[in-house]
Image (tube, rainbow, N blue to C red):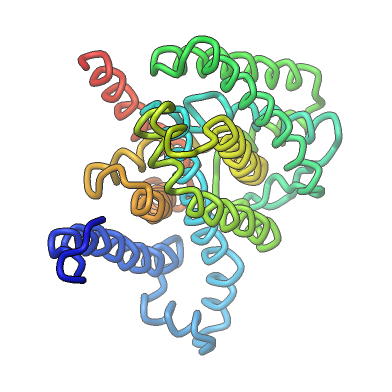
Length: 356
């Protein structure tokens, strides 16, 4: 950056200001949607009463229980999961230099689902409850997460090997993701075949990605992992910008490309594993959000990472709120809506890629 008369150029200040305004606007919209999401449902609660309750003013014992025990953890889980999936998509697309990179499209989410199924069926970490809201409970979240992480890491290693041997073109990565998804889905079905009725019901219900099943303890674990991942990705934002320009350019700037790529994929796999272990498979969020944000603020990772985090939280929160309202009082799993939104976008990106 060049200085003129000791001052920062006005064009650069305008560049930064525009991107900051987009991100700040997204944060404000996310907060408004957060309040609205808590206020709607089978029992409607006025938004100002929601604000009073969140500020510690006990307006109604009934509303207090609904907000703190059901809707608040669900809304927060949607935001945290959306942020986690979105930032992993940003980083995968950058370090693999592939616009179709995301935990879902590369088969990493399905690998985590298989790992969690292994934990639930073979290791006995999942059990059925009598309540619909918590039909499946993970009684050993640490073991379940580590098992899911192991298989996410396995899928990540396969992706990196394929990328190294055949290159990271969109076509190669998509085909690899399809193969891995099919492989781990077949593995999950194999386990289901030998499961008893309770285990089968637990796994089938669990595979429907749903943010409503997270309790406060699971939410705390997810939040801690996602915050650490955001910090790590933010620290490496300049490295990702360099890799976006090409491996040779990045190496010329002193970036250890292989190390950055490996560690970035491992961190992304850990985030995916935690979310899959607690919430099930939620597809396409990590693919859609980075592309939506790029259209607004460009490819600069300094703004793309926080912008995608905000967009991911907002998109999944909107999807979860809509899933609760479409066929109320029944609740659709949020993964159904994200799949409906994500599939057309995925096809569009494929077509646009081939046209290029």
